[in-house]
Image (tube, rainbow over all chains, first blue to last red; front, side, top):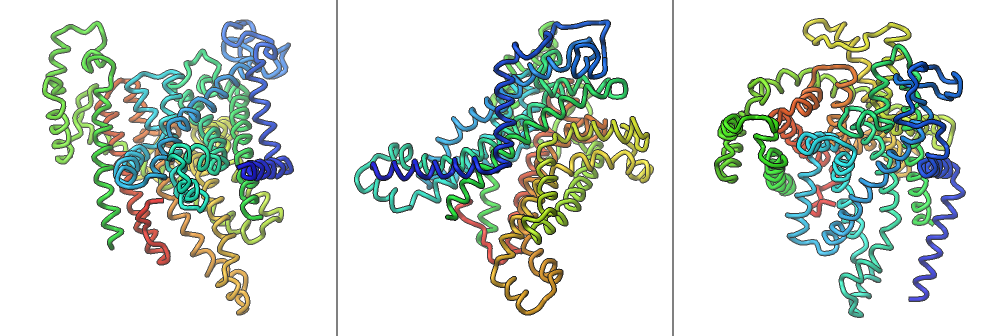
Amino acid sequence: MENNRTRRQSVMRMICARFIRDRQAMVGAVLVCILVLTALSASVIAPFDPIFGQNYDMVLQNPGTGSYMLGTDELGRDTFSRLVYGSRFTLAAAVIPVAFAMIIGIPIGVYAGYKGGFMDQWVIMRVVDAFQAFPSLILALALAAVLGGGFTNAMIAIGIGFLPNFIRITRSQVMSVRNLDYIQASKSVGCSDLSIAVFHILPNILPILLVQMTLSMASAVIAEAGLSYMGIGASPEQPSWGSMLRISQGYLSVQPWMAVWPGISISAIVLGFNLFGDGLRRAIDSKVRH
Amino acid sequence: MRNLVFRLVSAIPVLILVSVMVFSLLHLLPGDPATAILGNEASPEAIAALNEKLGMNKPIIVQYGDWVYNLFHGNLGNSMVDNTPVTKLIAQRLPATLELTVGAFVVAIIIALPSGILSAARPGTWIDHVCTFISMLGMSIPHFWLGMMMILFFAVKLGLLPASGYVSLTQDPVANMEAMIMPMIATGFRQSAVLMRMVRSSMLDVMNADYIRTAVAKGLSERAVLVGQALRNAMIPVVTTSGLLIASLLGGLVITETIFSIPGFGKLMIDSVFRRDFTTVQGSILIVAVFVIIVNIIVDVLYTFIDPRIKLDKEDK
């Protein structure tokens, strides 16, 4: 047991060491850190109020006018402040749906992969197939039609959209380890299924799930922005980057900068999550290879 | 053959589940569906009349049975807004969406295949880095923002292309292409990124295989090896992911059609959500889901034909 733990720690350390040496992965990590820090300290960083900071003498200003670093919107609100507060929506959009999908999806995936049989083949996987038949944006539209729009419902809809993916990946990972010697050994010494799943299988498949988590966060940010852009996510006055894009479209020929900044922010964060996830995958793959 | 049968049989419970899910949509409406549709101010008579029309007074199993019966007779119900048959609404909108889907898919392949092959042929060189970087950008830039930036640049600044407005292909092919080229590129670019990574990694795998080494040893030119031997194998992931790609394309098109005001299927769906036209939403979602299931079955079957080594995995890994 002691030996096992040391080995696990050293594998984890190896993955971390490879990750830190990977330049692209570090760029991703820095971008994600910037998002988290901005979201946490938005009230300190933002010079103006993002929702009520209207100034009708200063509408649709160019970047650099007065104290408006990135210009103003159609109500004279500071674009920079709105972007800074918008990072909170983005962070929530990255975390909530993915956490939702993982909390529900991983146990189901472990169960299906470990137990197999009728339940797995004809119940769980067929439900997963059924969910996967709905493209996630369309699932979100359907839920918006029934439950109404809004940020919370958008989060639920995106989370449900990720669920099948997490179940599938967890299941296939579990299936690839369930017949390994050490699992059989734990079985033979009388470990319960639950303890095998939690203490022996989960730690083994965790790295792959972390990769999937990071890459899903990238998609979640895009999905939230897309839903808010269509007007069924965050409401227009909320400074979500997607709703900012929605408003900016009406002023594209008058004040194009309004559309430029939120788009760059979304792209940068999504790039960050993608680089992070890819770096993690490389770190794990080289662990396997060596 | 056995696998094909298994694949078809396992699609049956999925189709049933999908139909139950779509059917339940109307019943998920908080409270009484008729009140939700007509609003709280509606008179009790109007609500009762609508309930009658929707068949809400019957037991739920009977309602489901009626609905499925109608489905098999090609009847998706009538729009709640103007009473047009939903099938007619969808049929009107389908050509634009099909054109966009095919166009975006072609754009994705035109970008992904050459760049994927190039970077796999020269791994670690600057060509590889540039191609990989572009595909990373493609995965990170939201396609609706790319669309907006294209409108800004090509329509607003340069005035080369129309910002929006759709002309059907049969009416005026040139004007149609002018209107469709930006949405096709905006949607296709993102898909190309996913596809390019697939092509690159599967080419890299194949390039180390024995038979490629043999081909090189025989003295075949690099071009002959790449195109003649490796590409065929690298096409496998292109085919297998195309099912997923088409599903995500369809989802993405909802936004693309909104930005470029293209009267397609996606625009119909989002407009119906805002008009609270539940039968149209229900019908459109069902069509999309069934379409995705069929595409996936075709892909699975194609998969075994392209690569005889692969047998449909019974475990469905």
